[in-house]
Image (cartoon, rainbow, N blue to C red; front, side, top):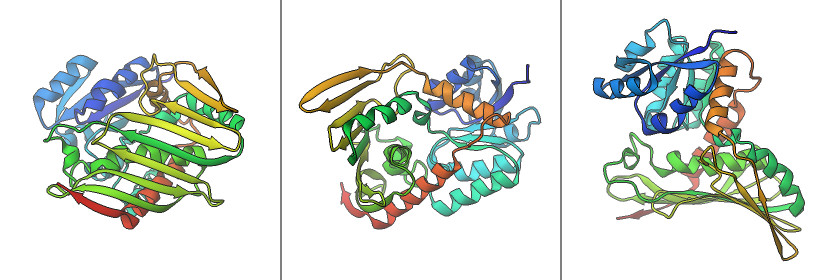
Length: 324
């Protein structure tokens, strides 16, 4: 049996506590070795729960020789700096989305990873859920695709949430908008471009609160994307074809025990197709460990580059409305 990948964690984010590190504990071939925080008490809290070492300061963790890879759940605008530092320290990297705030930086980081022969993965979990394969099969039953839509919206966060600080958390486009954009790339292919967009921006803090994006494929299929953090919760896809429609809810962060329900409508009749439960967090961690061990063929770099390109197009082309 091969030696497990020794994982260090830079930061004590909520997603690490709730999703990623519990998945690491459940997967063979990888183990949590250390958690670093600038706050020693936070590091100790994580270390106690996940059975690892507590480290004060991110630099101290990167300097450790017993760490093979690092997980970076820091705020969005801090990703690029710490990804680069980790790669230059010789570590493989699993980083929360997006890798960076701009296309050029994303391309540079991926190039640095290739030249260093290190794995660099953007941590989107939903593409690793088995429902994606079944949805691809079932969508053929609604005929030739005429339009696609996807939304990821969440209720407002507390006023001091870092996502309202654009220089730190990046705002709604980088936090939740990247999910339906990434879904459109996964489900429609890489030849997507932005036809138009609208962004609602907090006048005082400058953070993007929500937005809508119209994408299109090379042959004219539109994809309508909604996102934001001032809504009721939504996380869905809908395909409209020549022979019917297909809709799925809770597509981005389903619990491991959740059984997705696909609603297929054809000729006025509705059919519910209940899919198998699946643990996308464990699947993602397993895939990352396999990549570090040389057992995964793709690291998802193509999708990461195309996503960064689309985000840049949205930012350049959007009509911006400032709200109080």
